[in-house]
Length: 162
Picture 1: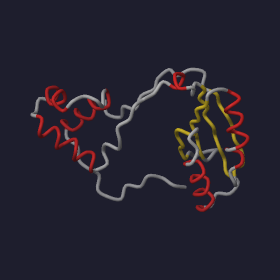
Picture 2: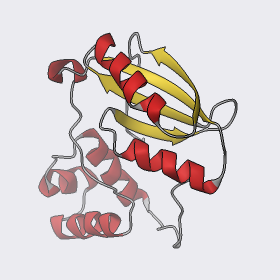
Picture 3: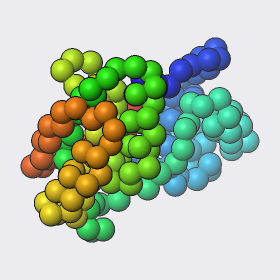
Picture 4: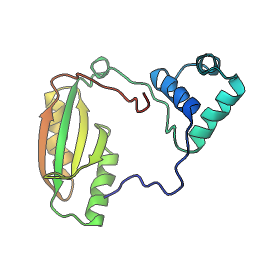
């Protein structure tokens, strides 16, 4: 199965880098000037540190978090998927199919009874049924799919530095 592989040496982050990351996680639109005031160093070193973290893969991307209900994606489903065959090729084909499905916003390889956990968003139950029957279940080598419907979100964060 595909996974992120760290091929280079891990970057070493100091307390200032971590403070910058914490601020950016809270508000990625924060200006360099605002960050520099918070971490008590001038703007040029802040800018250089951020650029270095971007170039070294510490900062992967900047994103806007959207309220799903406001864009007709109010139904969230966690799908557990097992494959019939577990060869490298079979896993790669499944992953390729999943990467082409906009409804799947997250795909994680897992251990245990299932091979993958998908986070799927749709407008409503009818749209999810169509996705499940006509897309997900039609992927070659899909064995079992178990759908768990999200009733509410208690905590949702992307903050890894705290």
